[in-house]
Length: 631
Image 1 (cartoon, one colour):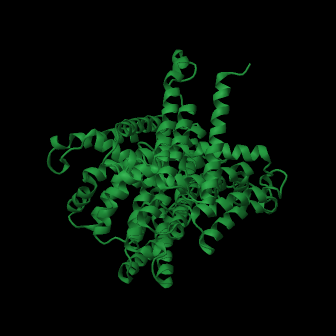
Image 2: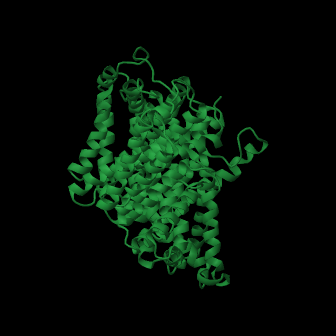
Image 3: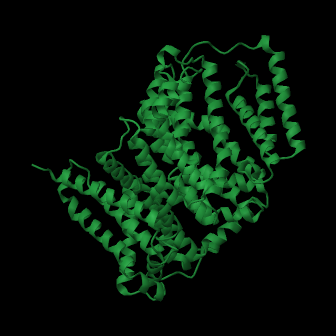
């Protein structure tokens, strides 16, 4: 007898596959009008959330009452999505200034349902922010000082959020309904084809012999997986299942193994060509091409992974953790020969984006077709009907989190723009910083990381792009550098305690204490915290400017990152660094942040002094241990 649970799972699979097919069709044939595209996307996502995330936990006495709650919510989600699609022309002609009574109630229902769906997917952080924003819209006249406004009626708030592209169906949801959806589907096809396994196996065979090799395998595999996953937690789980046990077997503690994986996986969101959802939102806000964002992110991504690589290398060197023997490792060349064709979809994607300058959506569509085509070059990767169905199902399910986040963020942004608070906050931040750029950057960093502790990176970026980025641009920061700054620190929040989401995922796989894992992950990522400041002062790191300046900025960045890593890890040329050497290394790295011959020469001089000290005091300082366990 077929269980009701199986029927629900089957129905969800069909809807998820249809969700993917809709986005494949619209990516190739062209998207619909904004309201239509966004609300079809949202309707699919909300229905799937209520089918797959029940109101009551399975096995409890209330489980039988689930459909008394989830059934009506799923049905109402369809109505909410279908109404703007059918009445699109009428809404466009009337605008939001004259809503019907039905539209007001549908807008209210849409707002509440989105908040509930987001709560089920991600917890309370973003829903609480949306609820506070809604309360602010109505309580404005009773608030003091700069927070006061004239207040708005229920009809005005509901219509603005539901019927315009300044609310629920605004830029974040538009990005989710176009760019993000098709790239998530592309990642699902790659995963089902076996590309993810190929990336991990190839990294393991190529780097496993190095000092602390398993940890470096985790970094390389996470960088490769990050090119297609764009999610810190998903990347941690996907690669960590393989890399964390190997790191533990090589002598690393569970907490360190989970921290390495989480820190490396977080960088996936800034790793071209796919990156995370926030990168696509940046395209819409700045009005630039995705290729420009992808190119700008290339050097920072390489420097981030270099920083993590250096931090891990110095740590395992101090502890004497060796790599695996060659006999324990598979032949890397044999693995590459067996799966090289799985790199073809990424090559096609980059060529279409950069070479031919196709739109991101159409480029991703053809990349999906390439995955299916090249999969037939190997028996183990061949994508027949069953695998294609599974890829469509996985793709549809993987879109849910981003869709909910973007819709809920749209509520917050809609209220901020309606009340004018977004414009006022930029001035407040500039006044608070007293006109100092470095102080404004530090304030922005703290705000970005705090928000990122409870919110996904895309939600953090959207909110900060409205509230904070204008203040940075107003004091002279390059617009792309400003947006990359807040994007980057939203990513680093995934490994910043007390709510280090990616580190907690790594701790779960490693069987380690989440708090300890989060602290270690934060320490491993510390060298990367300098990077955003570097490109604010020197946009050449974002490929802005003359080639000679870009080259010099890269050299300065590499030297600064390595020096800072050595200072933080207290390790220099095979030995424990002294306190004054750490001071020289750290000061030299900081001098390299600001461009200019004077600061660069001072920085190089300080680093040279540290190196000279290292060799002068060699006999007085003990060598690192030859064996041990990384704590």
